[in-house]
Length: 211
Image (cartoon, rainbow, N blue to C red; front, side, top):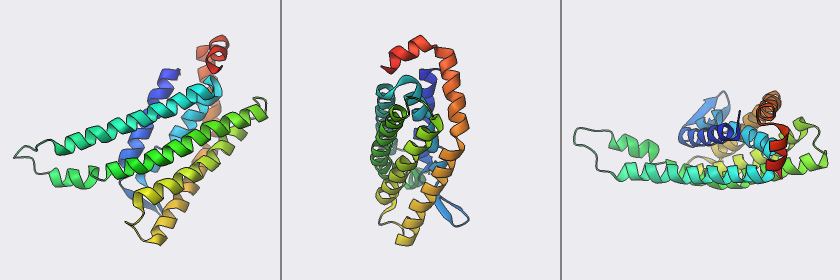
């Protein structure tokens, strides 16, 4: 897997998560945005990029995701204001579902910028503190705090004032718990992806890109 493939996968997961996030799903007592099935993947991929290519490249990837989100909102708004064909009767449905996306994406952008930059910074911090050892530690330590920031900021901005307080608190706690479980479970995959990228790219190229 190359940096291009990692970047495309990162942006794809991010955009899918923002579109799915308009729906709230229930798993027993847990209430979460449907985007939770895709969004944690972005933290895994940014950690892999930071591990292999360095903090500077991972930070650039975060800004790329921000630009892609902005384009998503712009095109959805453009699609909304285009005149509907007379025989097409789904404008209200379009507005009802995709009309929420700007607020969802605004919440996602705030949570995304804060949490992803923290994740890259924390991952790099733990990498330096451990002298490049213990990938499992920096993968989980960086993501655990970043996911808490992301869950709280996203829920408060996206759904604050639109759902009861108890639902909002449930939403924050449920998101964080499930994201944390995902982060713990994806550690083996992180090792696999890092090994794949290093094997494909070569140590000399990686050293030059990580500096």
